[in-house]
Structures are given as C-alpha cells and as structure tokens.
Length: 456
Image 1: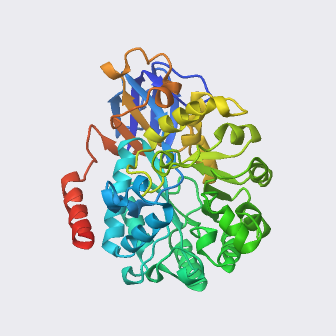
Image 2: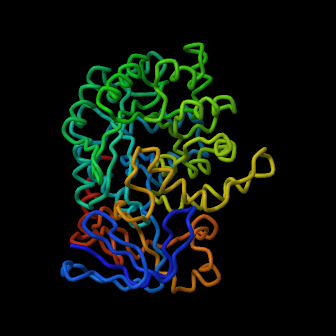
C-alpha cells in the first residue's frame, strides 16, 4: 500500500531547506519514494491511494525525546499543585501515588499519552519509564511496546530504574526500588527481545537509569558497560536541580560525576540540563552529549528558563521533550515548539546570545530529535527517508496572514488543533479526527476504568 499526496500547498522538507510549493509526495511502503510536481503513482503502483493535499502544509513527523507516559494518570490534580508545595513535599506526596500503579495502568496510560502525541504530529516517541512497583510485575515496558503497536507509533523505550533506597538519600519509596543487577537484567532482556537497529525500525531500547541522586554509582557504571556492549543509547535526568546534592554526596557535580564513568558521548543524551553552568555545557559539547529540552515544566516548576541560545552557540545537540504529566499536564509536542520559542523570547534581554530563529525550534523537534536518538532515517522529508510526516489543512481562519512562512508557523503562531493527518513508516495513524481501525471511545473507557479502579 502506498500514498500519493497531491498538490501540497507547502512541503517543509526540513527546517533549513527551501519550502516546496504545490508539489506532491509519493510514499512507497515505509519510505518516501519521490517529491516533486505532477507525480504519478505509476502502472506498478495500482494499490497507491491518492490523497488531495490542496491547502495542506506537510512537515516531518515530530520526535519526542523525553516523556513519562505513566504520569498521564496523575494529571490536573489540585492536591499535587507545584505552586502550593515545596519540591520535597511534592515528591513525598506523588511518589507513593506512582507506587500504586499496576501493569494495566502502565499500558493504558501509555495509550493515553501516545494518542495525544499522534494527534499533534508526533511520529516517534521516547519514553523514560523508571517506575517499576514490585506488585506491577516485570512486563511494564513490554506493555508499552504493545500500546505502540496498537497505533503504529515508532517507539524508543527508555528502560529506567532506581536503586538507591530512601534511607540513603533518594526520594524513592521502597516499593519502587530495584537492584542494579535486576535492572540491568531486564534491560538486556528487552534489548534482546525488542531492539531493532535497522533502517525504519519501529522498536528500540535505551538504557536509562532514572537519575544519579536516586541510583548507586554502580548502576551507572554497569549501564555504560551494557549499552556499549549491546550498541544501544544511554539516557538520564541531568541538571534538574540535583547538582548541589551530588556535590555534597560525591564531591562532584553531576556532569563531572557522569563524565568520569563514561556516561556521556554521542550515544548519550540528558533530559533538562537547566541548572548547568556554561563550562558544564561546554563539557557536553566537547563530548558530543545531547540534551532533551523540556520547556513546559518551566511554567509549573518555576525553574529558570534553560539557556538554549548558549547551548546553540556551543554546538550542543538539542531535541525537544514533552516531559511527564507530573510537571506538564499534556502530551503535546507541537505545543512545546511554541512554548520553547516563546520562553526564550521572554528572557532574551538577559542573555549573552540571541534567541535562535523560529525555524531552529522546529529543527529541535525533528532533525534534532532524530540525532539524539541516533536515527539517520528520520527527521526530514526526502527520498529514501522514513515516511513520517504530519499535515495541517491551513484553509481555515486560524491561518489567515500566516501562510507565507510555513517553517516559522508552529514556533511563532502555534497550532492548537490536532493535525489533519499523521503518518509513521508509511502508515496513517490519525486522519480526519480518527485513529483508523480503532475506537477511541473504547480506548478512553478502558483507560478511565483502570485509572479509577487504582487511584480512587
């Protein structure tokens, strides 16, 4: 089955290439077969479906590089409002709630998060799943792959974990603790069972110990060893306010602590990094370690606005992440592009470097994300690349006066409504307000039932 998108009003191949106007995209299997004017499916492509794309702006699929799907079950709760609690009070209140989740909850919360991501143009998602309550069993990530298969979403599973008990300084309830050996054994099992390093892979695994303050040192040391042995990527929370704690505990701030053990490099990306000094950012640039910037938690957490201009000036690899619903109550990466740009504009007068162009924020969410995940087959629209894209019909009042600049549209204006089409690997995931072949109401009802049965 293939598709021919005819007469696209604008094709944004990448954030830094000229926009193509009134041209077509031919999709053959999982890849883009051709881009140009007046394309034909050809006599050998009788099963190709022609789609009228008049008025559509077509973009590369968005790539989410940091999330916690399970937290969709703790959204919009007044009792967990950051503005009314200190960080320590908040952690003490929310982690016991996390520890109550069941395997069924992890599956349905993943369905909820993935659905919202897809509706807003995301075609590849990385999730940092670090919550493994003992009663929930050992198949939590397996159920996430099952949820991704349901939609056809390209899924990179970050197998997280916490090994340091609360009695030794972590914030983790005992019910969520694992041993380093148990954590790594499950990482290896998941890699052997699911990880596909080939072109157009829909499933990959990333070894992702939760964060240095909640793990023993050997958890990180052994994660590096296993990741390099298996050829998979590494991820963790870094520069999220924990560096003073690490300094007091180990004599080193987090970046030095991780660099000393090799938890850095082109196969490694950190989430957040908002508290890092300029010299620490330079260290990341020198080791080619990437950063997943999560802009929307800044609104709730009240932390400083990450210095993206400084990171850009240093040449850091940057992607965008939604982050979990505990600090961002939605799963809308499209909205994060707008938030990321606007937040940088808000604090621009106090910064040494200028705010990157709006196009650069689209780049972070596409090619930047592909780079963080090590995916050379994703992030742009070109012949031979994966057919991952989304389309917006701009023949609406919302877009009057904006259509001259499709590249800047998402960052500057923002796109509030769901896409008109989202496609991954040449398969339509979302079209005309529905998930083809799925009953959204049934998915909703099952998720609501699991949530209320467990948390109310």
